[in-house]
Image (tube, rainbow, N blue to C red; front, side, top):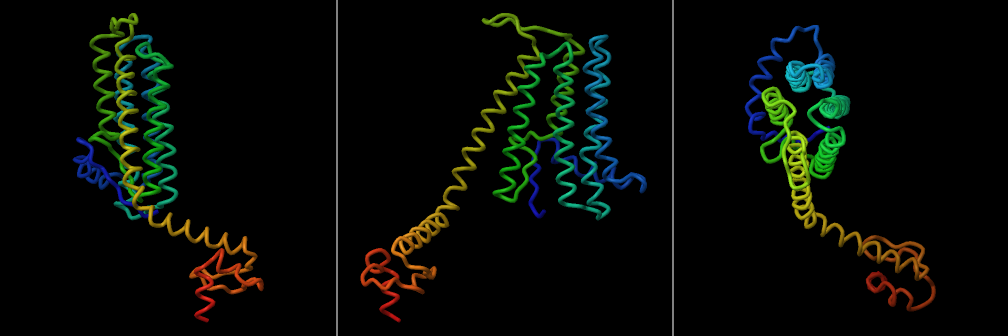
Length: 272
């Protein structure tokens, strides 16, 4: 699969030299698939840390470790494949993005199973992630450009923000916020803000993308419409077959039907 990659995150744009440095020092016996598995294991580790935080906030450090391990595995599988020239574009694309979704599901559901965030709020966060993923894949299909970050925020930046939230939870505990609608968990509030920002951003990006694509397809659409209407006119006029440039290949014997329904075809007949 040939496509361009866009990675313009505030942090991730600077991480490439680090990833190349690490990839060059990975033992030959470790392959890209192993790094993918390590990424999944890191996400599972984060889930375990969130769930175990019911027994003490110190378990959140396990979640932080899991996020770091997830970053290492998720970032280095593709880098390692490119460094060693063992890319498998279709297989790699499929496995990478399936495991990305699985990793995010583990981490976010883990948040919902912790004492810091409600499960329904965590599901909204996961839904926002899936919508953004769908937009990214649709844009890849129509543009052949795979954008890994928007407004300076990509996977690495999201991990950093999540780690910052975990540190905040370690300091404040399961804090709450008083609102006109009652007492709401602090982290539920932060998650709601994230979902709102993600929804608005995705809507704006999708609207701008549609406006950009519309004029690109307009000429092709008009030409296609003309071709279809001309063919339909010939078909309704009982012409068996007509060429795309208007030349009648099998005119109906009844005089005048061609000129009434397909004037371009009649002109072609006169020239022949």
